[in-house]
Length: 243
Image 1 (cartoon, rainbow, N blue to C red):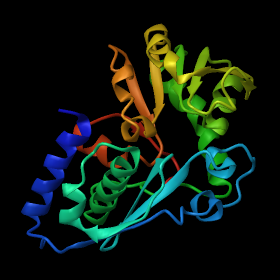
Image 2: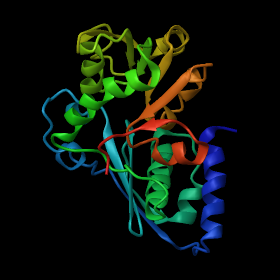
Image 3: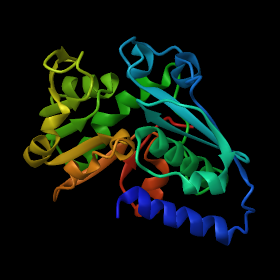
Image 4: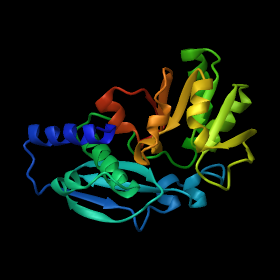
C-alpha cells in the first residue's frame, strides 16, 4: 500500500469522525491552472518553476480550508469529498487532486498551517532562513536536494553546503543553476545514499517517486504540497512563509 493510499484511508476516517455528509463539496481550481501571479505573486527572481510554466499549482477549497499542491498534470475537478475519495490514485492529476484536498481539509480543521504558497518577497525571505536552520539542526551536512527551488538552492550554495541537486525538467538537467550542476532525477537514490540529509519537494509524493528517497537518512520535505501528509505520518517539513 502506498503512502497516499494509507492517507486516503485516514482521510475517510476523518470524514466519518466529523460526520460529514457524502455530498460535502470540494472545489479544485486548476486547469485554468492558478496563474503565476496567483500562485507566487511577483518574486525577486524569474526562474521559479511556477513562473517558467514547468509546474502549476492546484488549489482545493473545502469549507473554510484552502490547500495547494504542485503538479505537472493540471486539470479541473469539482465534486464531493466522496468523489475525491473514490478517485484512483493512478495519475499525477488524481494524486494532486487528492493531496490538495487533504491539505484543504486539514487546514479547515486547523490541524496544519502553511498550505498556501508564499508570494512576492516571501520566497526570498524563506531562502534566507534555510541555511541557519539547517546548520542549527544538523551542523554542516552533505545535502541531497530534490527539485529545482532556485532560491533555496542558491542560499545553501552561498552558505557553502556540499550540495547535489536533481530535477525532472530537461531544460535544467546537466546545466549549472544557482552555482550547482543539476542532475537528472534518475540520480535521486544515488544522491540520497551519498548525502547526510535529504531536502525534498513534496512533489515526489504526487508523482510517486518518493520511494527512491526512503534511505536511512533524515528526509525533510519543503513547501506546501507535503503539508497534510507530513501531519498524518509525522514527516519532517519546513515551510517558513506559507499561509
